Length: 113
Image 1: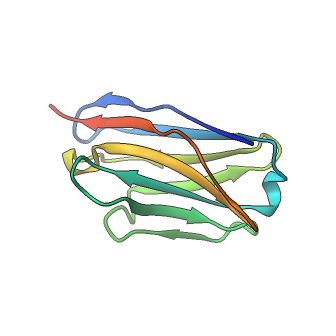
Image 2: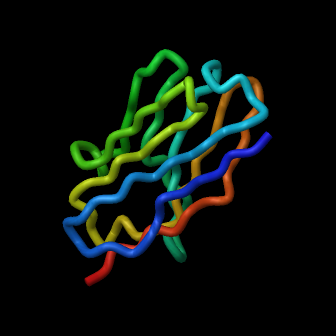
């Protein structure tokens, strides 16, 4: 099983990024998929979730700015991040949840002017 995140980088406040998490080795369509983030010195935070059926949920801190989506044909979950703020700076990781949980390695997102 492998989850590989991509799309992180350095952006200025107000800009956008799109993260991807490509899964292999699992029946992707059966899994709920989540994006978490962890900033230095802070606890890991659940940012966004999407169920196998496509229902979504967001942390209050990102509601209205971030959008999670999935493409079951590509075994990929996305996180579209708009109007980025410095406080969004963190390592973003995806995880897959069904009977077991699997985690990716994470991708760094830095928002700075």
